[in-house]
Image (cartoon, rainbow, N blue to C red; front, side):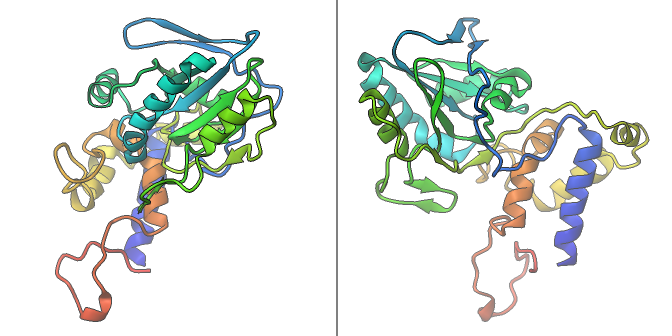
Length: 288
């Protein structure tokens, strides 16, 4: 228990001091705010401008995606197939990457491995994510032609962290689109998204925190990187089994919220050996 508390405390305090622009995102506070405009214009990696604006007809599906989130990788093919199938019915898909730690090179590698049949734009400083109230990847928003949010949440229920069903029991996104196309109200307008928390950038306006940053004795190099090296890097590095790397400062800062969440709920570090069978050397577990 002591090690778990120390690890969480070190991560939380140090990252909050060293990265004043990175704040803990609450995965349960995602809500599209009524009255807030959902129009935006961003660019793809090639510089092509993509605009989401009100129109006389049609539906827009805005998909918040990240390059390394396992659920995004699982759903990318499904989203592309859905976009192709619904394009002639006036449904347009747009992908948005709002992760502070996803560099241009990371996004391009993702698109090379998981080609999308609809545009992906970069949301610098998560302006559009905040505009929509998005907190996770993948998270989808269905907009009517006036840009009202008629559905927000998961794509379907086939995949969850640690869960993989043979097929979905409920295809939430497809049902919401079909009901909207039919001129009907969406029966289930919001379902909590599951997946990775968006690595957001938020300006710190608190003078006390700003002063603490200036005088911080804790550093990434001397403190946090050592924790990563002892407990995380063996798996969380390029070419290893973990889904994302924690080798660099930007990676650790960007994945801080998700890391804290999965440690706190016991999903990380992964360790499935039965304690009834005795003590294991080098056990990857944290005492409750």
